Length: 451
Ligand code: SAH
Ligand code: SF4
Ligand code: F3S
Image 1 (cartoon, rainbow, N blue to C red):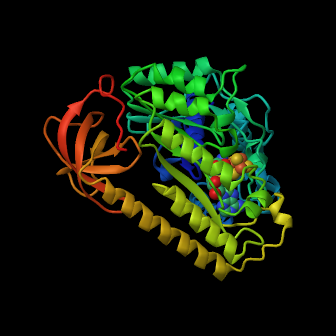
Image 2 (image 1 turned 45 degrees about the horizontal axis):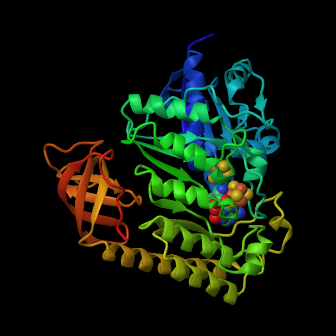
Image 3 (image 1 turned 180 degrees about the vertical axis):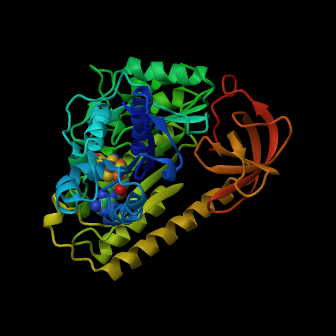
């Protein structure tokens, strides 16, 4: 095989970021060189996202740019990986003929084969979804990250079929990695000096390895190294167990932070979305979590302008935001996706109304985040130092247990990877500013509580 340089760009969610590392691992193993310079590449891959229309538009735009590289380099192979590969395979390869390679999320093991096919002048296409593939045995290539925090996919696919969502179609059925393989990966990362891992899945609460559930997995990961913080995403409200809450409260290094997408505050809309919970049930989980894990904070996802959403439904969403008081939120305008159930509903909330409602939702969240952060002034937090702040080398940036960025003055004895106890002195809606109290060790630091 000729030696080739591969360049990859990643779009979409954290699972895609983790998948890119798996793909890089597979390619490096086969003797490919990875390059960060697109002009130096023989193979250009885009790991793509289909979640909303504008995500796909962005990638089509980028493909247009990349195609111009082909003029000077006719043998350049251009490929699409990830979720768009599943949704648009014929469009991309047969109709528009813009790419040489289309490989979906469950066929990455065969990517080298498909690249060879493309080099031979044929189209390399692998878009089968699998019921079992978890890439359990593969070691992701993490050369590009910071050596501090790592993503680990613990499950793939989704069986929830929320009516607005393409993920069950682009990622296939739900399946979990073995508990042992995840624990082993965390051990390796700990040995390499990593200080934070985030366990990923579209719905981690339905993790199941022969009867061992997500709480069992979290507990097993937490004891690998008490100085490694553990985060996870995403939880679906339907499968949230009390056992999971007690597990988080028992282990000092399991972060007090839960991403729990609500999507809408209206029961009628939640039902149309097939979210399978009511707002009352959702609020019960929040209340229980606050009792069991003092100081826990929440973030969420919200969609504005789902079909038939009325002004009252919209007000109900704002009301839930005020009740829960999320630390943060990812907020989106509804985007109809072909093939989903909601696509057959009438997209009857006009663009202007969607935008207006989204703006109100964003403003409300900004206000809440600002207030929550103001309340932290004078409080103590333990932050994990990630490096210099973006703006200046006179400051260091770190994250609190609840995932907020905190800025401290740079000090000689403090460096990336240290845990530091700080006192918050100032806050905006997005950032905390703090004074250093002392370096600490998570192993002896009592679980940090701000409540
Ligand atoms: N599995 C995760 C979410 C994955 S997608 C979960 O269930 O929470 C991330 C977010 O994108 C979703 O929570 C939803 O808020 C948003 N989203 C998904 N499909 C969308 C669509 N068609 N239009 C607008 N937002 C969408
Ligand atoms: Fe999509 Fe719903 Fe699955 Fe999340 S739980 S990935 S929103 S179908
Ligand atoms: Fe996008 Fe696929 Fe993730 S659609 S959000 S990259 S699972």
